[in-house]
Length: 116
Image (cartoon, rainbow, N blue to C red; front, side, top):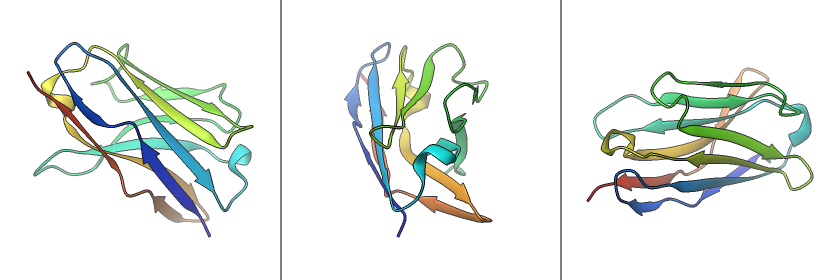
């Protein structure tokens, strides 16, 4: 079955950086679009970034453009989110997502806290 396992979250000061990772299994990873979402306390889950199956096309939420970079390694079944210039409003649980055959698949998430 589909499994998505996120890692790399933690506490970071404003202006700092983190790199999130997602290990995928149970499906044909290299044929699927992958995404990162986040959910802040008291807010709805929102799309952060997506990447095409072979990594040639990406898109980002306006709030993270020019600060975050999504990438993937199809040989390792991994998708990454490099987060730079982090702000307190980036604090959230970050989820790896696969949308496939009209279903959303989610990992358990990794918590990112941006605070001094």
